[in-house]
Image 1 (tube, rainbow, N blue to C red):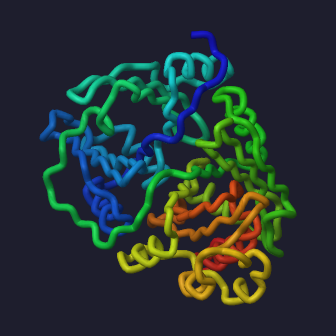
Image 2 (cartoon, rainbow, N blue to C red):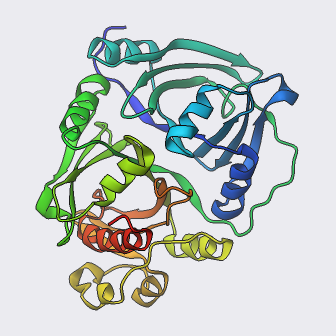
Length: 364
């Protein structure tokens, strides 16, 4: 098929490499409300790794750990700690997408291949992106399950309160200084995305540090990939801290959609999820951003939920604390009511909150 556009349908699954897959599966099930639906390991004929398949509505995570020495998963974990190894786009034609990406300079990781099981046929092919992250193109048009290779999980379900999480909204990468433009151009040329927003140094900064960011997205807006790099400042920025402790570029956070952020945050807090705190002064100066919203401002303040808006509507968002021992990966919970932005007016508050956490760690 001649290339005309990538025909991206949206995000598919997200693959985590972790030190202990069982513990990570229970963590995401219990705190984030996933069902553990699949298992892969020695009992299913896979001898080198263990993986759990987690699902909630359109949100699918895998958590995978090595169980033999010198596995590439061990190498990833040794350098980066637990983190995101693989992000995926569902596309119409994996072969065309892969060939186009490679023709535009992407380094192939795994040529397109076919998996087949009782649920049908899935086609996948992968290229390398920033750090040790790979991007996989997925065609599941002839597949009725979630992912091949997993058997139904028969262990206990450990989730507590239902969190109402639905799907991936966007995935944010942190890259080295001077590499943001490179990766934005890469995604434009190799994966048919387009630059949507550019945040300059003065847009996201404090007296100590700053960052710059570009957002690339698919033409149907189903895939959004913000890319951050550090900018010069008096002290170390959150992006520099990430790059230092992650030992390179990688996925900083995943934003997850909900239709009812108030209920989601209440449930997640009750389940034990820790969130970044919002200063009380934020709500004292919220002004017109809080006008005409459906939710109670008092409830949003109680739960530290942030508000932003554009000409199309508004969004509500909140960010978790890092989920690992290293201050790398975290999550954003987001509810969109027309707004297509990323909470630019909240970046200052978020940046200041993360700086306070950096200071506690001695990394500011």
